[in-house]
Image (cartoon, rainbow, N blue to C red; front, side, top):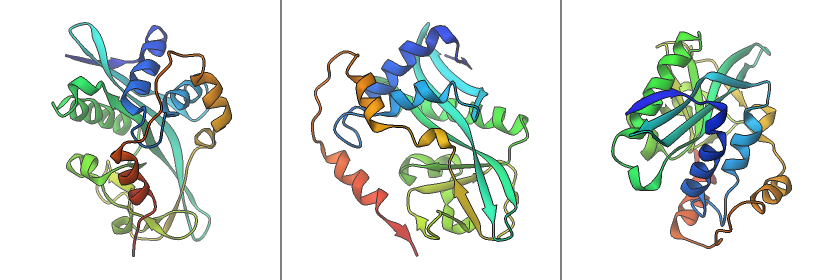
Length: 210
């Protein structure tokens, strides 16, 4: 098992890997593979923690990072990181590969001087990796609420001092759904369908911590 930086020659395989991992997971179809494609060319993309996990010469996992920001009430901004999409090939999930991939990326992010990561995801997948509810760090969305799926990890303990921060994504996250669909239409045909994980995602993504 090797964790290494993604190479340009990995791009197509990684996008296919992401597509298979996310297809029909949250919605019928997916757009995460298109996001990975556009992220790499954006000014907020961070190449150092852009990693793949290779097992017996085959890439089975990927994680990509971009810059994000926190803003306090006085308008002071703090540059932080967010990651996603992150995936492990379905047949290798729940075997510890995702943990190894994420923890290596955390080390690289800290070495670059970043001290906070904010993500959106299922707490069940991330609390064991040191993520906590955004409410505990007083980090809110731009509507002032605390999404249940917004999770925060301090790479440096005490990096957040309790003041209220508003999280702001990189503009790259606001990609065109239509362009994503046009790109998806050029790839191998996969069947869009409903599955129970989509209802779980709907419930989580519409839930807030009070």
